[in-house]
Image (tube, rainbow, N blue to C red; front, side, top):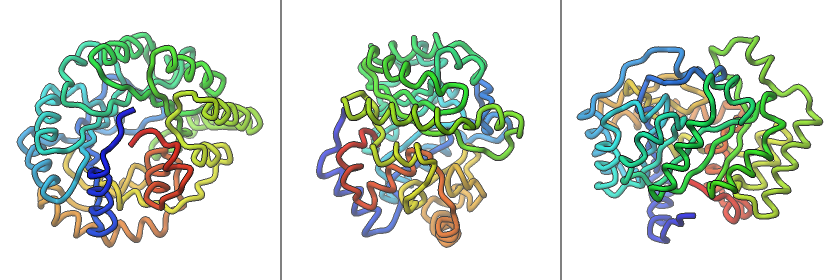
Length: 323
């Protein structure tokens, strides 16, 4: 697992705790997808996309603002031909680069990702994958292998639902066999997803659910390549978000059309990156604070784990294995 240098950690702390600015730019780089996952809202609504020059200008401004990490995600980054150029530009400015992909095009394009530091691939099951995401998992596994052959460390992301509850252990074993890492987070009831889908995929059998998550905790303790902390997994098991959310203090969210949003759970438009990154962030800061203070919390692992790191929770600092 790649470790950050003390200098990088100090830079992040200075940016977030002293300057009180976010350190990660999470960019919805594409509005298109080559899958139609039933529990995802992002592919259901057509949005515009920033041009390459607009994205490079945003990254310039992000670097000047103190951002240290550029994350490309949603809906499917690998559908953008200019992705390698964008990653190279961010890397050239000293930003750590990250990407979240469904992996369907990964085998075809993994050789173009030499400027990518962190690669996350969504894979929620083997038997259940087709019903969840409308495709076979074979291409994704092939893509993970291709990326690893190119020298990438890979994190497999699994969204826990009723459909794949019986496959969680198998996915950990698959990650071990591949030499990859794996993360888990529970399905989130997104706006725009039908009641029928939620009733089908939501957790109903609480006893089976707790047993499955307890199994993950035990595997984690035995050294399985699960990146999540035990603190977080216990929250998932209890379905309780017992943490202070710092997501908007850590991460600046920019959608594909250049609109600044608070977070994945609260995606209300707060400003426009075209007005200038620093100006737009400052204009949105008060609304972000109100949203943060009124939020009931979610269990997206990136928000929870990084918020716990922000609050210097010892077990999370010791056992959370990603960024």
